[in-house]
Length: 290
Ligand code: HXC
Ligand code: NAP
Image (cartoon, rainbow, N blue to C red; front, side):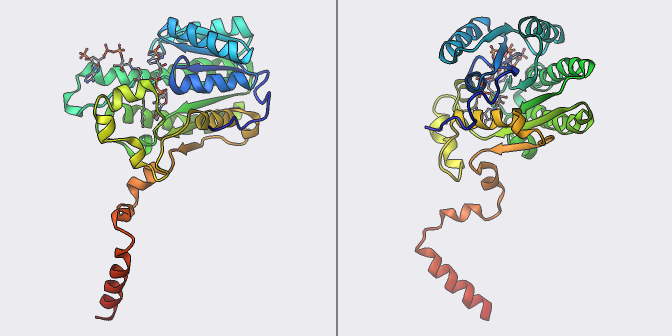
C-alpha cells in the first residue's frame, strides 16, 4: 500500500474546500489533507453522505472536517458555501474543484439536458467556485491556490464521454488562463489529470455491468494496474502545499502512461511475441539490401 508522502503537518494552518469531497477521490484527498493537519470543508449535493464522511475522517485524524451541502451549478449556493466556511474557519486558503458528473453514451443519443447537465457540473461548477473564491481572495489580498481535477482526455478528447471531454478541456483552459492572469495576486492555478482510479461513482457510470471485464482499465495502462487513491492524494497535497509554491499553470498527468500508450504509433507492437523479433529483424536487414 502506498504511504503518505508529505511530512507531518505539511498543511497545518491551511483551510481547504474540496468539492465532491464526500466520495471517491475527493474523499481520499480530504482524508489525506486532514491527516496533514488542514481544516477541511467537504461539499456536494448529498448532505447525509458528507456528514458520514466528515465524521469518519475527523475521527481518524482528530482534525475538523466541516460538511456543507452545495450544488456547484448554483452560484448562490457557492457564495453560501464561502460564507459558511469563513464563519467556521475565518478564511479559506485552498480550493479543490473535484466535483463532476459523467456517463458513457453515444453522443447522438444525448438530449440537450443530458449534455448541459454534465457541462454545468464540471465546467460551470468549477467556474462558479473559482470565481466566487477568487474574487474574495483578490479583495482581501490573500494568497491562495486552486487545484482542478481534470482527466487525460481534457487534452486528447474522447468519444462516448463528449460532454465531459468538452467540460474538462474548458477547465484546463481556465487553469492555464487564470494561472497567468491571477499570478500577480499570488493565486496559483494547477490541475491534475488522472487516469483510471477505481471509485464507485466512476466505475458505475463508465464501465457498468459486464463492460468492466471486457474493457478492464488496467489493460490500457503500461504499468498494468490502476491508480491507488493515496498516489493521487500525495500529488494533490504536494501541489497545494507551499513546497509547490513556484508551480503555476501546470497540469500533472497521473495515469501510469495510459494516454501515451494510446498515442504512440507503434505501441501496439507489444502484441508481437518475443521470439518473432529475430525473424522481423532478419526481414528488415534483407529489405535494406534490396
Ligand atoms: C443518456 C442520460 C444518462 C445516460 C442521465 N441522462 N444518465 N442520458 N444516458 N446514461 C440524462 C437524463 O435522462 C436527463 O436528461 C439528464 O441526463 C440529467 O439527468 P438527471 O438524472 O436528472 O441529472 P442529475 O440528477 O443532476 O445527475 C447528474 C448525472 C449523474 C451526471 C446524470 O450521473 C450524477 O449525479 N453524477 C455524479 C457523479 C459522477 O458522475 N461521477 C463520475 C465521475 S467520473 P433528460 O433529457 O431526460 O431530462 C469522471 C472521469 C472519469 O468524471 C475518467 C475515467 C478515466
Ligand atoms: P465520484 O465519487 O462520483 O465523485 C464525484 C463527486 O461530485 C461526488 O461526490 C458528487 O457528490 C459530486 N457532485 C456531482 N454533482 C455535483 C454538483 N452539482 N454539485 C456538487 N457536487 C457534485 O467520482 P470520482 O471518480 O471520485 O471523481 C472525482 C474527480 O476525479 C472528478 O472530477 C472526475 O472527473 C475525476 N476523475 C476520476 C477518474 C477516475 O478514474 N475515478 C479519472 C479521471 C478523472 P453528490 O452526488 O453528493 O453531489
